Amino acid sequence: MKVVLQRVKHAQVSVENRIIGKINQGYLLLVGFEDSDTETQLDYVVHKICHLRIFEDENQKMNLDIQQVGGSILSVSQFTLYASTRHGNRPSFTAAGDPDHAKRCFARFNEKLKQTEIPLATGEFGANMQVDLQNDGPVTIILDTDQL
Image (tube, rainbow, N blue to C red; front, side, top):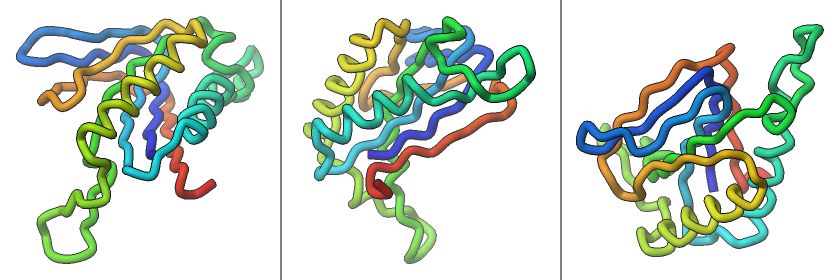
């Protein structure tokens, strides 16, 4: 599982010119899955996302987590996180999870995020989405369960 986490001032995702998810301050998550992803990995990443201290406190130090600042999460599936550009110029996506498995993982991942009671908006799995955001910082963190 790979997650690109971006701290944002606001973000939204649209499908066919219709906004389907929108947040103010919080995280935009671009999330990809592989076939070996497990419930344990989902739990680990959700815990890490909820407890990362990357918002600034009164001393401008990254010391607060998303819950402490009343932030929200926009979760967007993105299989292209598993692109391999090792050979040739056209990316290969063979490392990306089987679409059925990845769809189940994305749904389960978002269920776990909802259980944290952090406000959550999502993209649409498998859709051609347009994502608009205002990055805050910028602060971008990559979480990769293959590096645990």
